[in-house]
Amino acid sequence: MIKIIHIKSILLCLALCSLGCKDKTSENPLPIQEEIAALKTIGQKNDYLEKIHQADQDIRDGRDSELVLKYGLDSPEVKSFYSKMDSIDALNLEKIELYLKEFGYPNKDSVTTEAAMAPWIVIHHSMDVDKRKGFFSVLYQAYNNGYINLDQFELYLGRTYKLEFGTYPFGEGAYDPNEKINGLIEALNLKK
Image 1 (cartoon, rainbow, N blue to C red):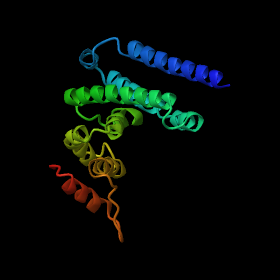
Image 2: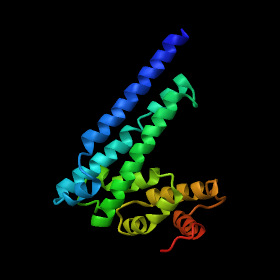
Image 3: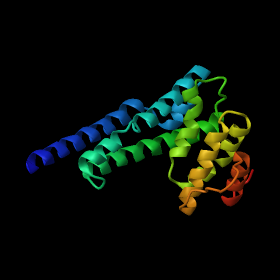
């Protein structure tokens, strides 16, 4: 019985690894700078951002919970899954960083909802506080332009705060999201 479980575990790891290798080579034949330079039309930019959004969401389809329940939190299967997620997140963050430098935040009236959300969601999934803070000015401008909403901006700031300080900033009494946003910006020492 133990041998069968061990063999199944090895096969699952190999399958996940082969999927990860296949994804990287088939979706990224060009260096990212060349991919970005090739985006000439709004349709191409939209498709590029939609693919990033799709990659971000595909890895977060609940498989992690299934693997944890089946194999345990410290299992090789779960560790392999999270390693693959970290790789996808790092690649997506690099793509978004270069995209934003070249084109700025996408106007939500020019692209699909998924494309407009891609930069925000990829940045939001980053666990690197310094990188998250580095994107503040572009997200703050996107928020002020109405390209991301109040809830998204507050969620980005709240998670950044949690990653930096270890707690989530909850308050008591009446709640004003604008006051919370301003308080988070101040607490994180971000410049408007």
